[in-house]
Amino acid sequence: MRVRITMVCSECKQRNYNTMKNKKNDPDRLEMSKYCPFCKKHTVHKESK
Image 1 (cartoon, rainbow, N blue to C red):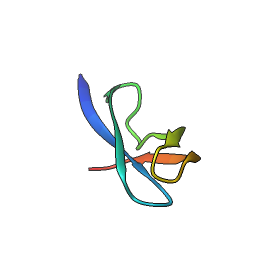
Image 2: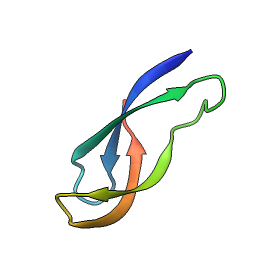
Image 3: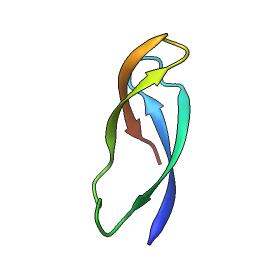
């Protein structure tokens, strides 16, 4: 049930992080506050396709 996802910065749209999620527990798209090395600050990262 675990799938690999890519996290995208909401400000600069860079694909910064790869992670895993359980589709059964989290059917919606994930949103996390993570550090963006391109923006050089913490921003909201969203799950991409």
